[in-house]
Length: 547
Image 1: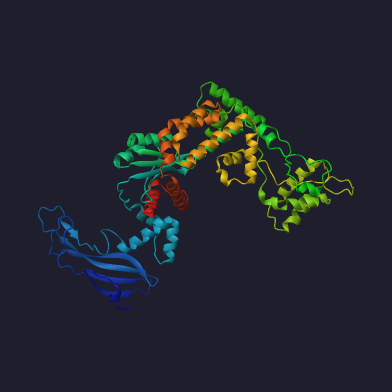
Image 2 (image 1 turned 180 degrees about the vertical axis):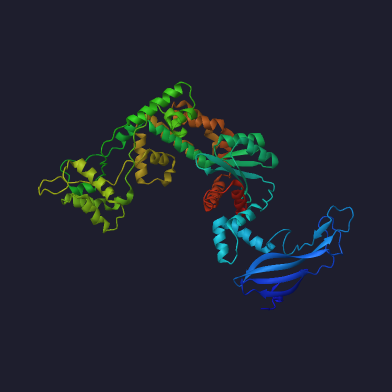
């Protein structure tokens, strides 16, 4: 079946012999030959007027109307007429159509490469199949790997952050040009020498933003010592919150007393108590588990013997962060019972009402609130009712018909905040705290002198960061060091060691926020490849996505 499609083809330097629809395979076959009178040697550029032989070259092309397209080119082999040229025989080239040794047209290769960059191997293979492009996942990834990395222009403001091959184990480094807002390179690790080598190869960086990592600070000093380092403000506040949390860990007993809710007055009715401050009906828990206390004592004994955090973590099969946390505390942290989920909070008043009416069966109560939209499990209701029965001395689950049965006075929706919640509240902007959080701050200030000092100093530092005013930083660091609080003293020592970057971070307009956004994009690309891609493929896809 022959038909003319000359009007649809761009054949620069080619002559269309004919177009055939192969009924057996369903492919459209385009047969062409070159119209160039004298092919040129690709090595020396000498024209050759002699033809030694011909052969047919087959190329896949973009589909037409859902049908696969194949080009068949009649190619001439010619001898090079230049006696000094080492190329004796050459085949003529088709620069507008394809490249040497390729089995696809250039436009098909570009389309498949774009699909591979966007979706990776398996996803790209599925999409290509829907578009009548027959290609395997490995061929797509090969096309992606052959994409040359974009050239890196002169960078004035550079941001960096780490990203995880496997979280907690292996990390790389992402580099972002703040002014052009794109990723310019990925480094395979976060070693100072690797960063320093990159900076030596790309001079001209004036400002560099980073988190508080020492390895990046050392790498910048080695590779570009004249560069201004800017410590990210968000990481400063994050480190401050961690210091506040460590400062509160040793005061669990005092915090329990400070945050204890008042008991209802004798004879107070259920309706009156529902309007009173809510009670914490959590059953008493042991302060410290024996296993945790034994680990705490063992860590301090090994540290006293001069052992490193890494060796202790390996011996006790703990994470280094846990070992560091325990080593910095004077006593073992108390067990913290996590607050119950909020799914049941909307139904607590109903459960209390049904309890007072005599319904003690948790399973029936769960079935009742499920009809009202509750999506939690029966165990949530069972534990909740168990707390109420234990608090009020109810041993049975059924109503005994007694007129003096105990009444549940208040719902248990209010829970004592966790230490992490309190630490976040301390460094939060005062204008953003609600009434409940302001009440927490008052109770923290009344807990004891050390907790009050932690709160006061932390708020002062957070206020300096938000005001972008480092003028009082030295005074604050001396006050934190002289306070005798180990957590704040350690935080202050870290700021002292990175003082210039912290000062720059407080007043400079640049931050690491844009870099964190590109790390999020990197995670998306990495997860599209199911975490199995090698570094070169991840780098190619991310740089192409950011170009």
